[in-house]
Length: 121
Image 1 (cartoon, rainbow, N blue to C red):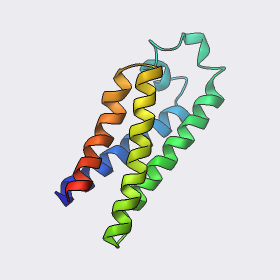
Image 2: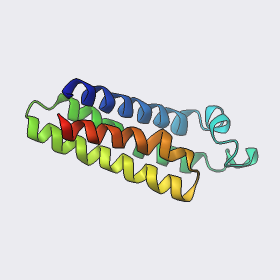
Image 3: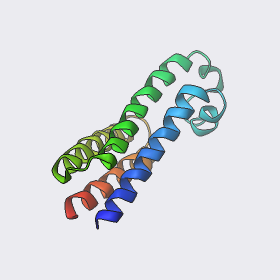
């Protein structure tokens, strides 16, 4: 179960690195494709700075999850992983409640599954 937990943590971290890239560097291209149903096309340029700020926060989540994979002490590793996975899960649940239900399945659910795997290891 420890290997599954680490794989799930790594996948959630990779997802958030992708979100960082999209929101900070590709908001007017890839972001426009991904969020076409949520924002009119003319809103991407004026919201570029806001998206970049959100991307930075996603980068912090990814950094914390990657950090948890590098910690040798099992208790600290578990605590750090649970903290950052919990942040991702809460953000995903909030996004699902306020933006689109799809965010629950794309963001919150993988984090929740990783939390379960970490708790069962």
